[in-house]
Image (cartoon, rainbow, N blue to C red):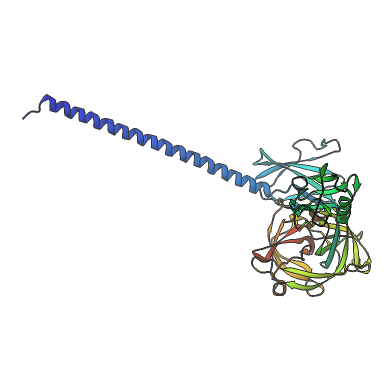
Amino acid sequence: MGRSNDEIEKIQEQAGKNMVVILDKWKKKVRRLKIYRACLAVMLMISCAALTGTVYYRIDSSIPSVINIRAGEEESFRLGVPARAEIVSVSDQGSSNIPAGAVDIDLSRTVTMKMNLESVYQMQVKLFGFLPIKQVCIQVIEDQTLIPVGAPIGIYVKTDGVLVVGTGEFQGENGLKCSPGKNIVKSGDYIRKVNGQDINKKNELSRMVEECGGNPVILTIERDGENMDVQIKPERDEAGNYKIGVWVRDDAQGVGTMTYIDSQGNFGALGHGINDVDTSTLMHMGGGTLYETSIIEIKKGAVGDPGEMTGMIVYSDDHILGSITENSIQGIFGTCNAKALALGVNEPLPIGLKQEIVKGPAQILCTVNGEAEYYDVEITEIHLDHDNVNRGIELKVTDKRLLEVTGGIVQGMSGSPIIQNGKFIGAVTHVLVQDSARGYGIFIENMLQH
């Protein structure tokens, strides 16, 4: 029985609708597929960029910014990176007397150099031989020997000016809270002058504020390396004394370890600078003194607690070991007196440059039982161009004697010499809080460049 025209038209109409639905679904599927492919492409590009960045960072961090070479001696090092380098000498005028391209080296292989003391060199490193990645300074240094010490020292330093620790409130004579210095001075500022007069002690600041009689005072402060004048109007407290509501410090003291004594009677210690405990900034030092100290207690390190050596310091002239002349990120430095020179009972050792250090056994020299002794450690990582100059060496204490007494590295051991293969390679600087057996050290060449 045949279909009517109306039925045929309905069937055709339905078929058309079905076709539209199918086409619409197909278009949506195509759009989803395009979006999916675009997302994959973006993810691939991000992954490639991340991988490239990681590879670039690792290669960059494995190439030191400075390479020290002993004058007149053959020095070999291997960076093991897919790069080539061109070396030029640099004159006072910045020009080179080495023709361009005359000295081209492959940094994936062992490189051997021999240079003269009076020369300065630059090495342009190119990744894969064509992509500039880094400029390396090659410094030619005189070979030297140092006496490793490893003895505890008491440290006292005066700030260069008065250090602002913070601002605070006090009860005014009217019963209201006062904070005159708030938003005018800030933590880390150094107060150099009050009304044009130099000051170096916090009691001088208190006296001059009191003598102002409530009139505004002009403080000359150093902030981020720049000097500026600020004005503060003191207020009376409940006792009728004028105050500006500023917490200050003018000195610091502590216990550390002497690292070395050189042939000129100079010392280096700590391997890191003295930072203010409240502001965590390197203290600007106006002078300092080393004192004899005796370790009276050792708090053993544990997980989450680095431990500590407590020393007894007698601040008297007959216990002075020398003068501190510099506080820098590489440590504290100064001159020794006869008492300090007597601590250098060990034989002088040649310095070991960072490219000579290898992973494996080494020793540290420290005092935990009344006299300096060598203890076994293992060098686990070497960062030739670490961002933090105090963490170029990673080490782990392996000596059971030291682990039983201290648990590894504790506060107060900063500055303990690190020795490997008969060479003086660095000093202990930090301990890992979560593992007191592990810590960091500074390259000895970094300490010598202070």
